[in-house]
Length: 461
Image (cartoon, rainbow, N blue to C red):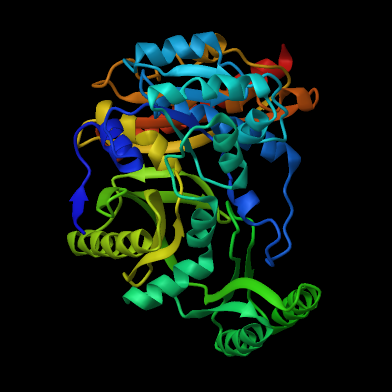
């Protein structure tokens, strides 16, 4: 097996990794938070999902427009704003063909909508003759079912393989196996392992070291609990043990020491069908209470740390390949306040936000560009057309590769919750790029201020 650095046509390289051929068309599905399906029936931490948030996340399906090429298809929950499509075309991106579901239900993923749409399934079946493969954001039993109904081969491993390697328990055991440094901790798969972990965590708390409990299939800040006192630990122990006894003694957690973090990091690698590992990119991850908010590029690492990350990526990719996985992999990592690097906190063997930014990064931004990918919150009282948003951001939108500014890479999430009532929240996803971190920060402040005014203007109208 070999390790390569991804270069050249990112779409051709991805197609080759996923399907074995550089010219095979793909059908993309942006079924974000596929972890919800992997977590079904698993013994994890109690969690709450806010319906309004799910509605917005489900419209992140539109991110796939910037990853697909002109010979590909993207399945969406609803047709994009025509002005937004013209905007993307103006960036010089050759857009894919768009297929929409007949009845998109806000609480369902695009995959769930597609499975329930016989006409769309038949249309997808008609693409079999072109050699098309179905490429979901991540593969659960829902995407397997869609592929089966349409007769399309998956550009991905089975749902069982994808689920297995996405478990935080798998990540921790893999790090132990290949010798990657990781926080002190242990996996909890049954009541005995849970009891031993609780005793160990108690000694950390007595020494003033916080403890983190992680659901094996948690995502986006859900399924993570930081514990700072023994009383709270005892309460969680009782709760988890009680649930486990009702479930044949099963537990699905990782318990670790909470590290004094300096920087969150995220890097991407791609494992091809032959088992070769391609290192793609590393970025600083922006998080808030464990929830991903965006990326900064380049990552604040020394050259030795870069080498350490690449070495870890090669080891992770080889192990994933041995377990039958191929495709895009995102790995969360971090540095601590005392300068240590932990090159794998967890594995996300699926597409990541970085995946959807790669085409932009390689065609729009220069090698010395500083960039900030983030989401901007909005509070609205009516749907906001893209043309109106574009006018409000006039002068800060980048209209050519050598000009600093904002590139919008998802608009559907702005109005996704507009049917929820007279007052709703939205998100605008974009990448701010310039020649320096100072320029990026100034542009980001300007965009934030204009969007705040935009929210106020829409509310008053």
